[in-house]
Amino acid sequence: MEISGFISAIVIGIIIGVLGRLVVPGRQKIGILWTIAVGILAALAGAAIAKAFGVQDTKGVDWIEWLIQIGLAAIGVAALASFKSGNRSRSHR
Image (cartoon, rainbow, N blue to C red):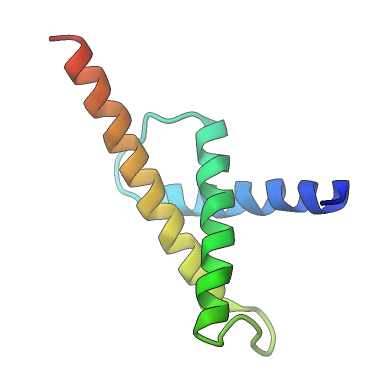
């Protein structure tokens, strides 16, 4: 992977992660690096899912692919926040 591809993945990961985080109600106690990681994974998985369904390239903005990616990011952020809060509550018992 070239440096431009790596930088693009980070930028897209930030955007997808933040949008996914905005969709999840309440406060998520995860850091920005976790948000970026979830966003990158959601972007990659969403692109693969969009390709599998044949909706990866549409005229104009690829809204369907973006919605899939943001939905996956929201699920990932919610799951990670739940996991991290569950670990904290168990460690304080």
